[in-house]
Length: 570
Image (tube, rainbow, N blue to C red; front, side, top):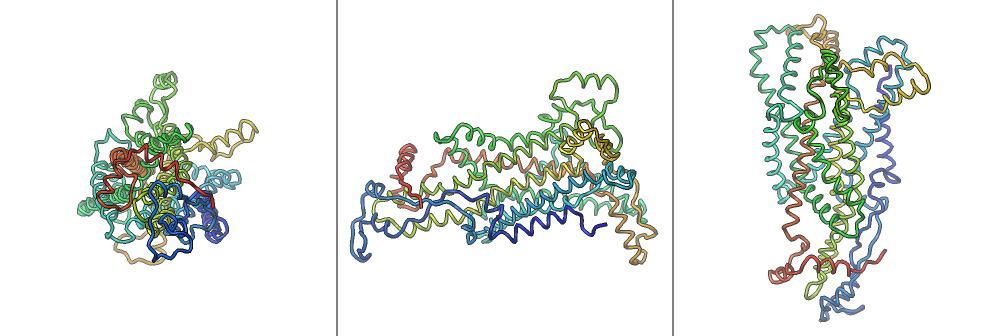
């Protein structure tokens, strides 16, 4: 038996190679290479705008050009991002680590699935392999996905509160997080027919499984009743932890979702954008709403999954069988959108994965929009009456470029959270994505290969819910002296005992997926309303008179000014 599972070695090797070779080639740099960005205007150009020719000392008085003449003389150089250009920028390491962790975890998951599919073909004990295929078993890749989920929540939080509570953004995020914490509690305690997750039921199942383990170590029912207040406190702590994670996501996604809404509003209104790209942007905007709707029972499960379906066995999680022959005939004659519960669960995971794919496709467009949105501030600074503040102009262009890794993390972190939650939901509930099942069908029906018993049994509804058998702790009981052999037996017994069942995982990750999707969409809609009603095209500090004069400019006039801005490629 290997010391480490192969999927663990593959994931660790993928992370190590990406980390060691990042100076030459990395996935993180490939995602941001080839983007156009503005170079800071040089001192000679600024001197020309301020009426000083080349070689004229700054101390000598000069008359700045008029606003129109400055716009005629002004140009800005454009360059392309390439490997290594972001190495010294702010928080680039976080962006790089996020990409490395998520990609390495996905590699480990893929290798683990392929090995799990191939292992029964070479198994020496078919009976043991069949039991393993039909039973619930945690995988090493699950821990990688949990790590990716926590990292995707932690990195944006680290960016937001890097300077403590000194900034307005940090204080605003704290308030939004507190509001999200309260709202998450309401969702967790919502009426059962509303959502397709039930955390109260999950807490009851965990408590019941914990009672089985405690009875196995010698506690009587009277002693368990005395521990009831402790169980109630643990139940409240579970809800509080989930609400806290929900509040963290609400806090860190507030301003990124507003920025995402601005990108969506301006790019869909731009006539130069193709219809196909606009359609993709619309899908990117509405996909979280669709994902959130799939976990609302009256809108999804009650529509697609008929109520007369029943579990195929007491230990089956999904309702895939029929109580009577009449129900089976009724299902056969039903419309095509009527599905078994396992089919609906698979389709729901695929919708989530499709939304993640769309978000990734739009990733570079989002970054490109951020790099070029500084044009608004550049135009306003140049068109000011009087001398152009060269230091301020150069600083704004540099800051916009240096902030790109932050924008990348804030965009990718919610995507990574949704992806990790969806894969954890599929793995921990036995939801098949159908890829390996399709490969098995091809091997058996096209090539005539007889499948091993474990794989043939895996195509049937899986018995993944644990039974009420207590764990085997040997002769050790609570209060006995803890010796090495007894402690080893206790650890083995707990390792074979499922405390958090797949039913609990379905509620846990179902809540996370609904919250991540709904929060992002709701805040994005709020951002759309904000950007549609609040002037935001000028972000420079001016006097009250100049600000009032600038606000009289129509968006059409501003767009004409941007079109007149001359660009020079570096």
